[in-house]
Length: 158
Image (cartoon, rainbow, N blue to C red):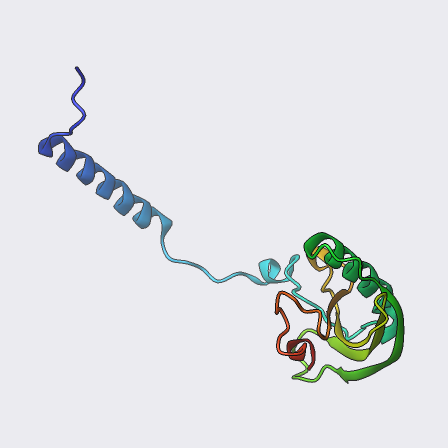
């Protein structure tokens, strides 16, 4: 039968070997050095936000398709957006200039149930999948069933 327990003598020897290994690696590694100018400028440019954000009307097809998909898959609802009205910009870069550029818009939507509701959305520069393209975050008042932008889509506005 195999002995599953390690004797204190062997355990002490293993711990001392492990500690010696860690100490030797720390001594070989030395101190950290700052990056030289070549390392700083080679593919480390960081985000470049130019403020090129699409107009409010450019996001409407995205909102229509995402709304229909969300209602059908998550809420088992046949609701779809049938039209938009009074689309207008409410803010552009409302905070400091160093933040990610966003254009905030609002308007009215007509749904397939015949009700008119308001929609609030933002278009985000480099906010698409993996930072490519423009992203859209939207909320239809009264249909924020998971309360992501509650109360009354207030979190979707500037």
